[in-house]
Image 1: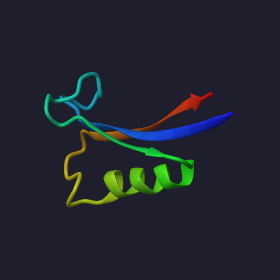
Image 2: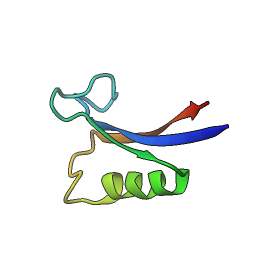
Image 3: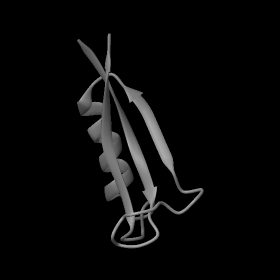
Amino acid sequence: MTKRFWVVGGEYQDPQFRALIPGTEKMVGPFECERKAKTEWTRLTCCPERSPAATVRYSIASERLH
């Protein structure tokens, strides 16, 4: 079974990460391997000039392809 990966997230309204601020949503991918998705996740999450707010969060999601 094949998988592909996506990096999803954005800036949230508060530190509880319950709701995204409209217009900040981002979905990047698909990536054919998890390593490439983790590289993009690191770029989006750990780069201070791209995510200066403590309420920015991204996750890696995967989907199965048949």
